[in-house]
Image 1: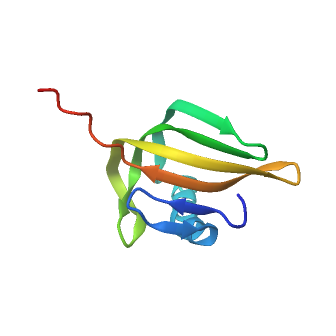
Image 2: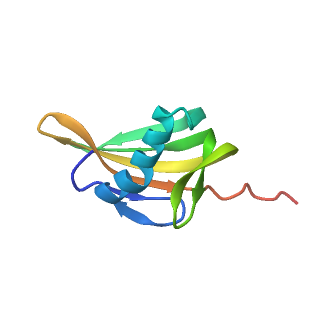
Length: 120
């Protein structure tokens, strides 16, 4: 991850690298290590990439399902034995930058796609 990494989550909250690591990555990593949480589905589809020199923009959809934790607004991830998350599908945009010969993740934007149009 780039030092200046930024993420916008499905609720519109913008987080810096340190904020994301503290509220998302570390809590889930601890639950995964303890066997309390696991992703049962992590499937990326409709992935497209566009290269702009040392920057690549990737868009696509991500289907998620998990067990053992819940996302609680204002509290982030909390243990929830027996709970199921999803299925949920997100649209994502990821921005990768090449720096010193390494590709680093610089930004992510996740969104819940709108429902399909109603055909009358």
